[in-house]
Structure formats: C-alpha cells, structure tokens
Amino acid sequence: MQFRRLGRSGLKISEISYGNWITHGSQVEEDTAVACVHAALDEGITTFDTADVYAGTRAETVLGRALKGQRRESLEIFTKVYWPTGSGPNDRGLSRKHIMESIDGSLRRLGTDYVDLYQAHRYDHETPLEETMRAFEDVVRQGKALYIGVSEWRAEEIAAALKIADERGFDRIVSSQPQYSMLHRVIEAEVVPLCEREGIGQIVWSPIAQGVLTGKYLPGQAPPPGSRATDDKSGADFVKVWMGDEILRRVQELRPVAQDAGLTMAQLAVAWVLQNPNVSSAIVGASRPEQIRDNVKAVGVKLEKDLLARIDEILGDAVVSDPSHTSSPAVRP
Ligand SMILES: NC(=O)c1ccc[n+]([C@@H]2O[C@H](COP(=O)([O-])OP(=O)(O)OC[C@H]3O[C@@H](n4cnc5c(N)ncnc54)[C@H](OP(=O)(O)O)[C@@H]3O)[C@@H](O)[C@H]2O)c1
Image (cartoon, rainbow, N blue to C red; front, side, top):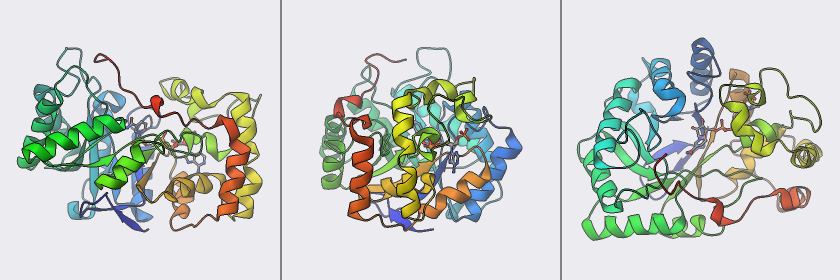
C-alpha cells in the first residue's frame, strides 16, 4: 500500500480506501462484509468510508463490528451526515441539531470515540452555511471528529465554506468526496483547480463506475448473477445510469488497453483516478474479498500519456464532464 496526504492536512490515508455503500447491511451478508474488511486490512488498506444513511444506518454497525479489535490508531474511519436517517424533518440535512445528533449515532454504531473525517454528504440549501460550519467546528472541538470534509459540493460552495472558516477561525475543510472515474470527470473543470489552490484532497467515489469499468457487463446481455445490476434492494437502480449499450460497448474496447498495461480492467480504472495528483484516495467498493485483492494492485501504477490518450479516444463523448452535474437537492430530501 502507498499513502497520500489528505489535502494539505497532516493526515495520511491509504491510496485505496474501502467503502461500504450498497454492500454492508444490504446486498451482502455480514460474514461476507467482515471478510471484505479483513481482506482490505490484509492488503494494507487503513482508510474506511461509510455514512449514517447507508443501509438505513446498518452499514456503520456492520463496519464497526468488522473493525472491532483493530488498533484504532492504525485506522482512518470516515463517515457522513446529510441524507435522512429517520422520518422527521430534523433527521436530515446539516442543521446544528441534526449534525450534533447524527455524529453521536455514528460513533455509537461504529463503536469508536471519534471519526477521523466527518463529511457533509451534500450541500444543505435549507441551513445557513455558517450554522453548519460552526456545528462542524464544535464537533471537532468536542473531539468527535478530527477533520471535516464535504461530498459533492460545487466549487463555489466549497469556496464559501472556506471563507467562513477563515473569517471565524474555524477548522477548514480538508477533503472533497466527489464521484470520479474515466466516465465521470465533472470535478476536473472547477472543483479540482479550487481544491489544489486551497489544499483540499479528493477522496473519490465509484472509481470503477460501480463495477461497469470491470467490463463484466456486456452490451445486449443480462448482467452476471450476483452483480450490482441484479441487486433489487438498491444497487440495480444506482448502476443503471452506466448500463446503456453504447457505454458498455465502449468499455469493452478498453480491454486491450488494460491488457497492454498488464492490468485487469478494474485495476486500470482505479489507476486512472490515482493519476490525478489532487486525488488523495480512491474509495473502492467490493461485494467479495477477491475484488479488493484485484483492485489494490492499482497502487503505484503509472499510466503513460499515450495510453491515457487511447482511453480518451475510446470513451469519447460517453464521458460526462459538465461541472453542472455536481449539485445537491434544492430542498432537503
Ligand atoms: N459521497 C457519496 O455521495 C458517495 C456515493 C457513492 C459511493 N460513495 C463511496 O464510494 C464507495 C465506493 O462506491 P462504489 O461501490 O460505487 O465503487 P466502485 O468501486 O466503483 O464499485 C464497486 C462495485 O463494483 C464491483 N466490483 C468491484 N471490483 C470488482 C472486480 N475486481 N471485479 C468485478 N466486480 C467488481 C462490485 O459490485 P458487484 O460485485 O455487486 O457487481 C463492487 O461492489 C462507497 O462504498 C462509498 O463509500 C460515496
């Protein structure tokens, strides 16, 4: 494993992190979830990402149990707040009330006294930004989180938060958690340049486009049994954005590119996001331990310019790059 600094902070995190969205507490049984976490630890992954909302809060509980007995100082545990964790109007969003209540719930479920990184899972248009930043500051001062970050915030939203933090002497945001893959590059135009200037690192999600960039989904054919596209709890709904035949056809054309680089297609996808120096870590998901063992081999891989150009040519206009795709709900969900 190799480690990168989380933005300009002093925190080092593993280049590949393991995240448990869709899988733990939902798609996979607990023994498989635990086996995946242990495979991640065996491969040198120290950084784990989850959220209060995943699997209706069960994902944090499963991760907490899977990490039980590990040396806390050797782990970086990340969670998030924003999406609903209950039916009430205050069980969601980034109000002081919900942040203060949600961090306590997350710590209890994860079985830890603190998380290393606490992230705003979206921008909350119904809470004054200053209220959110002050609540995050208090969470940090209480020792419940060591660093704060955001997820899927636009460049101007991040800039506004930094301005408040600087004016008030609050802790600054150190990380941004956007979707980023060969197919989804919307952060490159605005978010990355701002974050490079401001010392914010990207912890990127769905680097394999939820499994699509492994090449296992073939155009015009039924998805393989057990894959996310067959998960009727929620996985199939989320992955369908990448399941059009034209995208699947172009992805198949990446196969010889991966072969020429001596990589599996999953490794090529993970290595691709790690070529961006503003990326601190790629958060991979896995429904089976062998997927983690495959994907971690992307660590330290250097992709040459001509190979990157071949990827761009093959994917062409299937790539999503308009920065307006970064957005948060206008009202709380
Ligand atoms: N902040 C946010 O809003 C947000 C949103 C989404 C995700 N995330 C974070 O990002 C993490 C990763 O997201 P993701 O799970 O979509 O990432 P991903 O790594 O793009 O996709 C992971 C899925 O692809 C399949 N896969 C992975 N490696 C494979 C391999 N070597 N061979 C075959 N199939 C393979 C597995 O699904 P199957 O085996 O089921 O096909 C696996 O669960 C999440 O857990 C979460 O922590 C954050």
